[in-house]
Length: 339
Image 1 (cartoon, rainbow, N blue to C red):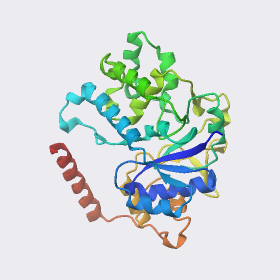
Image 2 (cartoon, one colour):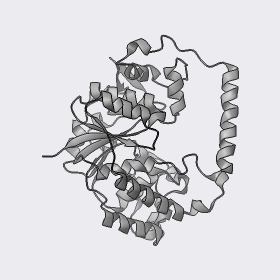
Image 3 (cartoon, rainbow, N blue to C red):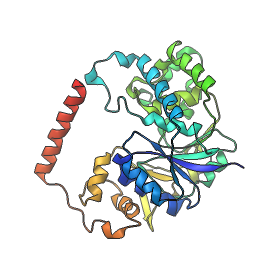
Image 4 (cartoon, one colour):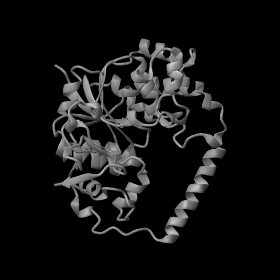
């Protein structure tokens, strides 16, 4: 019998976001389907405590799989031209663990939907599971509309190689914060072949240099080069399925704490709080007005099961607090550069 479930990449740093996402899945998607937390790192005390309180929640513990993907990513990024740059130019996500999301392909669910913790689920994903009957990857984002300069893949270089044309690459570009997939994709032999192409045949240069050490950019290479069928709802012939998802970019309408696309009141799969830090959500949950778009929706789901803890009002930080945080950010950046 085919198994279905959800994966979420998380740790204690994004605990508030994790709780909000879990509650939104329970209310808007499913109360029965199992959810597996992929550990971003070892900061998991709060996460493990929450697992004890939710019978459908487990922790991904296949260390062999985690090591496999960590080692693969490390080798690939070490071969990227940007690896020769100075420490000062390295991106803030350098040496991060977002690539751990790929362990979902080694997990227990035959068909799955992955959410990053900076999402809230807004509707059932039956349509995603249905598409997985005919496609190996299912997405819902507008990354394929990005300008060539900032796209995940270096399309002109790929075209120059003679392997793919712009028309073949462009529709396949996608995000990695929400997707459907299948167990067993990227087995060891195939991943070794892709590693060889990336490193020895220098196809690592197909990955746009602005996305160095970015799991999204690496994922785009993998899904393109494995040549498996991809479906993206934003390219659906059915206009009702083409919606926005970004909190800081797309306008939505709130109906009973569920968001819909402003144009045509189309139901959206999820709202993505990209470009906001986990610290912003911690402060929001403590009662600070941090100016996050649709923060009322986030607070609703974060405190759905303990409304008495929800802030009664939000107060902006004062000038001194803002100045102190800015100074601390500069100091932290300097320390990262030195280290």
